[in-house]
Length: 290
Image (cartoon, rainbow, N blue to C red):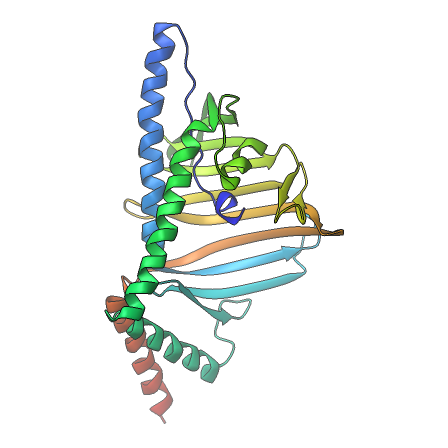
């Protein structure tokens, strides 16, 4: 469920017996192939870019102010990510605590940069998860039909807008693919680069999870946006979840807004560890100043 709602692209093609429509479909298919390739590249870039994530939690989707705010510095660490808690103003909560977190991150990166049996096993797991995710992304090309419904401007960029509906001919073969039969929505694709700029969707039928122990109700909503953070690099800027459902017999509501800012390329672990060492050295110098 988290994979689906994290903004995985969901692209399909419709066909027609009329020649002009067939040509348009082929053109759209090429574009959607580029969009999917671009989204896979976004995944790869997130493994070498750090960022600040601000999560605003609300009791209901219409609440004007969050009931709780959580902020982290999220740092890619080879086989996963490290999250350093920050204040609501995106500042360290304490100098000593922040230094301790950086030292722990340095240790993690040093380990991830090595090439022993434990590292090979950990990276193999990462590759298996990546392969499963990419296969699921690819399968969504058959899961939806698209109808272009217009174009919109976002700043100085032209976005092509597509309605996304279930393809009745699609037969899901896995539990994850079954999710695609219960959502619909809208896509905005950057016309110049074929980058996914925004996805907005809703649950059209109740979704049963965890062997019928949990359910997400029809009408639950999700949205995510991407922007070009540096030349040729598109990364998430915002996502929103408004889910209602039940776990066992207990109802639940999840209403979260996440903002992604302060992107910086730190590279793979061997490069990233030098970034962290530099910060630790600077903190040491500042602490030594009279």
